Length: 495
Image (cartoon, rainbow, N blue to C red):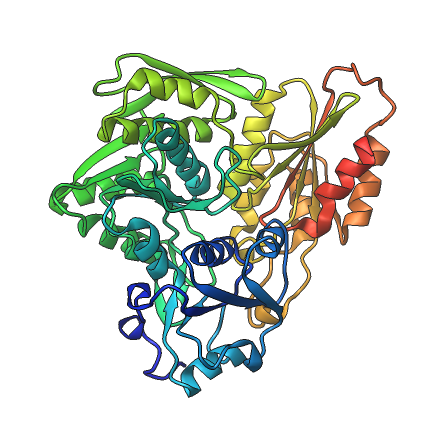
């Protein structure tokens, strides 16, 4: 366990540093950390960083910046005259660079605190939370604000295709950030959203996740309750009651919360409700009702009920801050989603390849349903890799069986044990595949991506004319690289 040297109370504020100060980032290639490192460079700091591996797209972001990077964690990576060390939440006590921080009594901090200081402080803070939909909803709200000329600050935990970058410090009075419930650092075992001083909070969903740090869903609920019950009287919580745990918590929060609580979703009891959806290829037309909305209808270039909810959350926030509804619906029609969310990677000869970030069983089920909406008559090949710390565990073995029920074929990649899996019961992917097949959906499990590629192209012809209508949809779901499977399949199809 860390000594008393490491604690939130002992962290150093960025504001205590002068321009030109030296900052070192441990774990620099994470989506959040890479962007904060490049942002610090833009603010005039001299920034270095290290990570065990460098993956795209953050690898290129860092390579094209002034951040000096080192591969691997080594004591000599930390400048002895450094003014501040930013320690990533994937970094453990005992890391050789952390040892240097402690031995030399160096100033340190963590990502969520530095994000609050750089992008949130002094602004109306909009924080998007929940098990699902954080990145998409954050990017959507940031896009609405930017298109409306509000010059927002924002942080999106992914590559936001419609924004110039995924972390920006704007000159306007609003900040919108993705508020993760995952812990902040080994010395800050609290959700990242606890640092973000919200004025408006969105709670999209609460389900069990992050089995590596939360023992139960009740432990997660407790953190959300602290967040909502700690809001000011002038604050607003916007909560999706399509999820039973959120609906139950809302009834409890309303008894003692000081803030205003608004509800949304497809649930007819919601203050702001989705009353109709019409799929139109990879887009949909959504009609919603609620205070001040009338019978508002908008189009979004994303499919699935979950994306209709994400968009509705953005509409509600836009009304809280006084945006013109007509303009908001115009902005929604041109929204560009976050990469790896229903992203079409290639299309040729009646075959469509789609990549998605889904890994929690609820997200997998929602993605399968959405793709089925978009392609009702095509064969759907759902390819899934349990890669996150939670999806690799046996905790969701049964839930995954039901998640694929609207696919035509399911292809799973087996998990390989890692050093961090000691004492953890991993999901039995081969048994899962057999159980999916027994439920009526053909399913196979393979040990590597080459076997998956070979199987896919043995089932799907690639010699149809380019003008052929869509007959086969292959959608690959993982929160990791899937060992380059998406890139390989795209090359196979289009060269």
